[in-house]
Length: 226
Image (tube, rainbow, N blue to C red; front, side):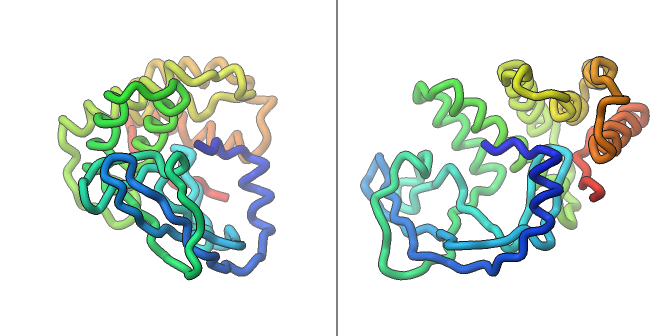
């Protein structure tokens, strides 16, 4: 899980490195032993990147593989970083991306396996992004189901309640996730606790955008304006 900060967003806009693929990484399913080859990059850049209020960055020239992989044979899910087997002698552009329904399956399976607290937080974070990808990012016309919203709310609130916010100077993401979960009062309370005059200009823009949406009872994710 990578928590984006104002400095990383601003500094990344100056990068201008060509995207160069590397030899594929081999991962092996811990359940049936099936191997698959995944994309790696020698270099990339954040030109044209989008930044979203749920802390997601979409960088076309800096793609990454899914941190959770689905075995093409047995259909079980596993953490990519735990099951690396070495390097291939050729490139691959396979990323093993999961759909939102697959992320839900992965969440339920992995949570039942006794994973660590950090891994639980990571799963929640990735699921938040997948939910917003599925329903809101891009040209989406899907009708949000009550079941999916309830599932998202449970996951988002679990992340908010278990993340160590003392490591964050200004918990704007905490306020944002409360808003996306429909908890407008809780979002407003977090915003109220943040010293507005101490925020940088970019942080104030995020703060104002969240506050405006709270006032309009709007819980949809939004793209940040750089």
